[in-house]
Length: 211
Image 1 (spheres, one colour):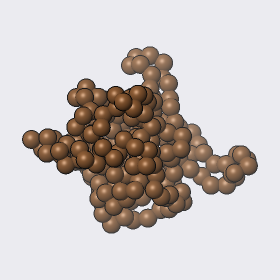
Image 2 (image 1 turned 180 degrees about the vertical axis):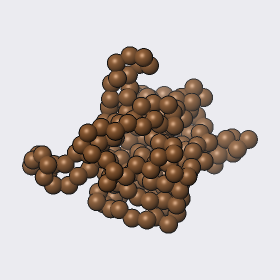
Image 3 (image 1 turned 30 degrees about the horizontal axis):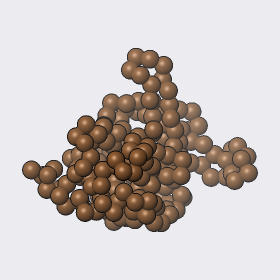
């Protein structure tokens, strides 16, 4: 019943959401920002609708609010534009693209839930100061292997000069097969919510689900 009500509430929003204007990022975040948010991870995402409102809707529809807000967790937040590109990839024909969230087939919604789980690192607060250039590994809420490391370069491409930033990589290889990592840069690191850590992912080079 909760899912049906949520879908009804967002159905009108999704009609607009299928346009590029809705998904496009409406603002930028400071890449060097490190701050205490004073609110939960979900409340932070809700407070930035121009960047995360599509993400928030999908979290609510898939029932993952508690997992995102779990104490001691890390959430790697994909921005609206990354999700917009995902829908364009999944539904390349605009005429066949769902016009509302409730129009998304159940099997596709299950895939979205599985994707979202891989942006959650349970029971681990990952912060930039504790990472190194060598890889460290964790397991996502969805059971996938995640990899983190620090890269440092400047706008000229000089290594070991300029700002340090986190690279988040996810193993997309087949279970039991060769590991195959796809990566995304963390745009804004170390946002401390009341329940854990939030890292905001760059949208210009990342499609939701590492597709």
